[in-house]
Image 1: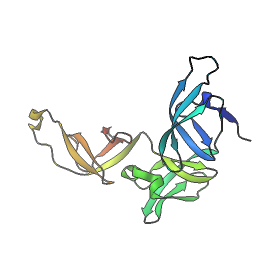
Image 2 (image 1 turned 45 degrees about the vertical axis):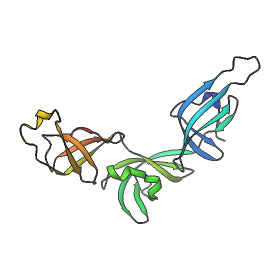
Image 3 (image 1 turned 180 degrees about the horizontal axis):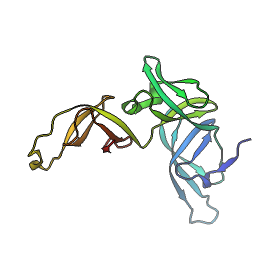
Image 4 (image 1 turned 135 degrees about the vertical axis):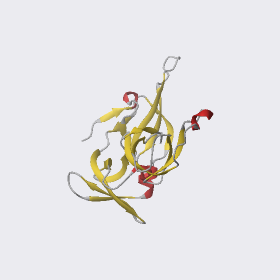
Length: 191
């Protein structure tokens, strides 16, 4: 039997199950009443892990949630086609297919063999979590010319091997590997 979590105990970045669906808590706001006998309310900004939808909902402090049967496993990216994206579980060596909705824009950062964290709910894959940074090769960029720094703009656009375009410093050349922050899509440094 999974443990029960009271609404007042839910914290930011916590997982819980509501109406047989796993959720991830993004923000918590507790409203304590000033009048005697009033109920303490907990407003949660939460993400549905199956549909990726984000919404706010208010609960009584005593409401209880189940702990979800969530599992994070390491998986490597294999390829994508019209059916979805394929990942190889690094423990069981099973191949998992995720739909385009589950993967979202993560394909901008995935190259063959990339290791990610796969979310499983009740044993079935429901989504993935990218590392904070990924290393990608620069497929195309204009050569940086001397004197381009006069405008104060010391960056140029570079197209990476996955097709994503980011701003990089002038000294970065085609064929170099660069680190990219997956959350902000910004240049993090040379690899």
